[in-house]
Amino acid sequence: MNSPPSSDETDIILLDLLQDEIPLISNPWELIAQKAGISQEEVLVRLNRLADTGVLRGIAPILESDMISPRVSTLIAVRVPEKDIQRVAALVNQYSEVSHNFRREHAYNLWFTLSSRSRDHIDTILAEIQSLTGIHPDDILDLVTEKKYKIDVRFPLRNKKDTGRQHDGRD
Image (cartoon, rainbow, N blue to C red; front, side, top):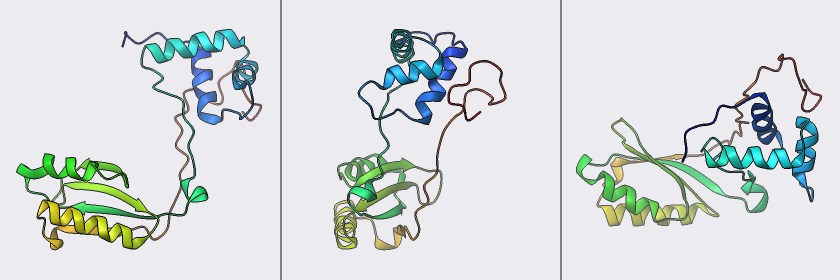
């Protein structure tokens, strides 16, 4: 990765637009270019430069997986002896049903999310993890998802009161 570029207002507008919505049309870059007030070619050059320098890590859809296949989810907290943390984390990471696995400075020092199509399958995975790691059941907290909240995480890069180009008419 190269050193970060100096971003101008157009880069900021593009990054804000990418967080808002990429339209599902045959040429989304043309519409984004119109909203940003630049050419499509300039959009692509700028996005490539931002990617090459690490400012932009990727562009990907955010899918609502429950709309495709309903899931049961839970957050698991495990009290793991410090000497075993790497081994247990590596074992947990082998399960495709684990979406996040992170260490915390807490008595329960390994936390991961687990989701599956059924609660029975989650219980089977937890029993396997317990058996393979030797962790006592009292050292595992199963914090079942009771209600799911979806938050819209965006990082606006410019003040909506800024003067200059308005990219979507909602400012």
